[in-house]
Image (cartoon, rainbow, N blue to C red; front, side):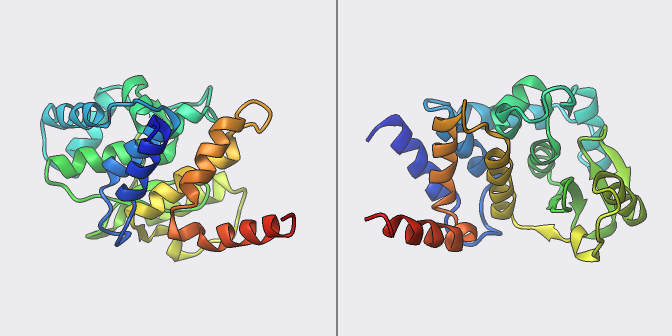
Length: 226
């Protein structure tokens, strides 16, 4: 088995089963390993362990303060860079996009005993507390804490007044987070320069049930050419 095949098999195993039971750090780092064959997933899990171990206050607010102090922030200069969708790169560079910074926050919080969740708001992923429907964090925007009104106002700004639904602020399962990361990569990679990377993203999408209909349609179109 080649390094790429081994990485893809690890990713497939990480995202299998109940979408709520997927280990987010393992799945996100397995995604990174497909794009970067040979990546040491365990090393970056240990990096997350150490980041959490240095968090002074095991509370949601404590996690937010800790990540700000550790230098995590939104990448406003190279937002579309594929590395912003790789958890290891985000941990190393302390820069990322809303969804990967959210993954860092969720995983550091989990390690200190705080249960946070991904909030799949269109156009701008957030962090939320599943036990508090009026508490959200905009990790990309400086880890600002928002209430529901603030989250809706943020949505209006980033979507130029797009349609709103309260369902936008519902927690999403870890596998849906990984699926959205793959969507970001698919949209962000330039087919002229990133053909191999796009093929790797396509291979990962093929193992996710969320994209089953898309895979079937692609197979149907290829069959016409056989």
